[in-house]
Length: 84
Image 1 (cartoon, one colour):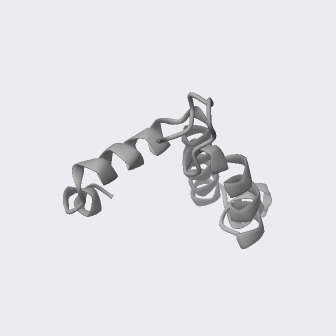
Image 2 (tube, helix red, strand yellow):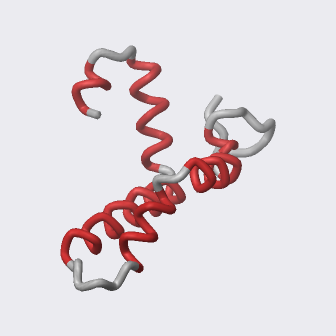
Image 3 (tube, one colour):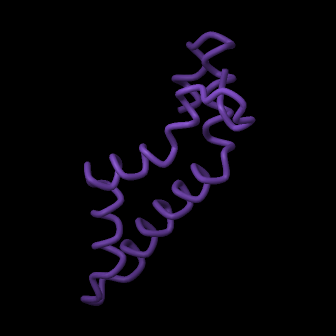
């Protein structure tokens, strides 16, 4: 992502930085990393980490989480979390 951001305007970099720093996004990123790591580290037949990783990568999960994070990209008047 660093390479991509280097080519973007200051406004874009500021926007992406604010999104990634949001605690909800940070938790999702951490959860995704943990699921992938868990799958790579334990392939003993327990599918819990694999199933979680697949769920996180699914369209349904993305849609569900996007609706929860909508305030990050659509300004809501008076909400201090909204990016203006």
